[in-house]
Image 1 (cartoon, helix red, strand yellow):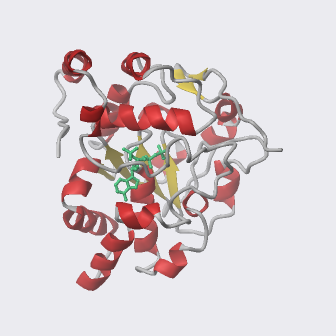
Image 2 (image 1 turned 45 degrees about the vertical axis):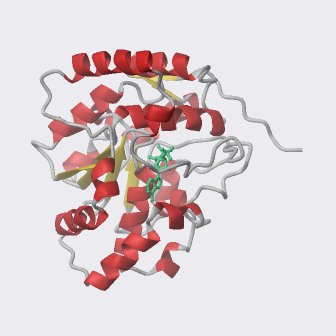
Length: 293
Ligand code: PPS
């Protein structure tokens, strides 16, 4: 008989709603000792973490698809603050990962363990427009069983706008990391740019990493990390996660991978309300999001 995981209500970490299992290991995460050659991939949930991780891993493996199949993406690129009962924590996994390490996190900038700044680690942040994030998150809340019940989409939209979802306010997250760009080696990317011109975005990444790659290799990377390829790739599509934790029959992890799916979900009234909320919370920011393809 399979174990049934029932999503508990979220706890609170320094005011940020978060899974209680993650909060329990927080002292370990906070004390994490980064190494100068660690590369941190930072995102708000559902903004392209897995996609960017796969792109970076294949760059690190010099374009070798075979080497990227050595393990599941969540083991190749450990998730810093992760913890589930019976599973190694992100920190435990990282301690066993050879350098140079790729590390993912969804932490808002103010909670980033100090060591990443002390060691001057490079950071790549990827942001995605909030309308597609909230739709993607709604499906993820249902398929990834550790989340509380999201209710209807209308209810979930309110929870999201109020910043009461796991990792808190999208607005604070994208703006906080945007401001961090002033003082750190940080490359700030957008999911929508990666969709529209992946070649150009991969060139930005290569420049940021100080790497050069033959055109043919870049073509191979783009093919390997396309939505269609990743969706059928068992080491990138999360199918290896036990069904008790992620039920892909409810919604696959690689669900649609497009810009503008929110149009298939928001009513006209919800869209108007969301736009007003967005304008209010982004006022004064020079960050701009593309909501459409
Ligand atoms: S998580 O759980 O926060 O780590 O999720 P994350 O990986 O950040 O985001 C999942 C969404 O990214 C889409 N995705 C992609 N889109 C385009 N191309 C590629 N290769 C790709 N890989 C993942 C994935 O489908 C989720 O978005 P939605 O809109 O739900 O499809």
